[in-house]
Length: 116
Image 1 (cartoon, one colour):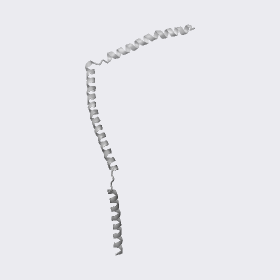
Image 2: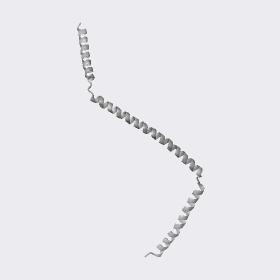
Image 3: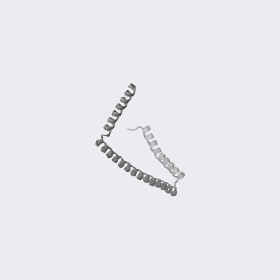
Image 4: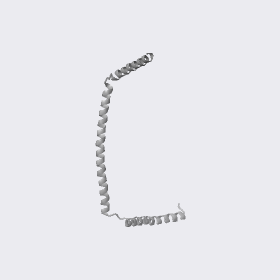
């Protein structure tokens, strides 16, 4: 059971609520009066955004083509690398043997020069 004081407080709160709500509507109305955007301003803003969207779409399409091209080159390079890895190349061994022979020959020549 509510006391008389609680009933009075609740009644006061209910009385203030519509008043508060009315103040909010008045503030919004004041804002709308102070800032009205014309149709031309909105149209200009839309046109600018649309133009920017078109330019970004073109840039995106170019970048996608570049990405596809680079992916293709990467794949081709990987295929070439695998071919080179898979092929038997004796050139390294031949060059290594030649280096050893030349080094030995140079060493022998140096020793002979010192002896003679």
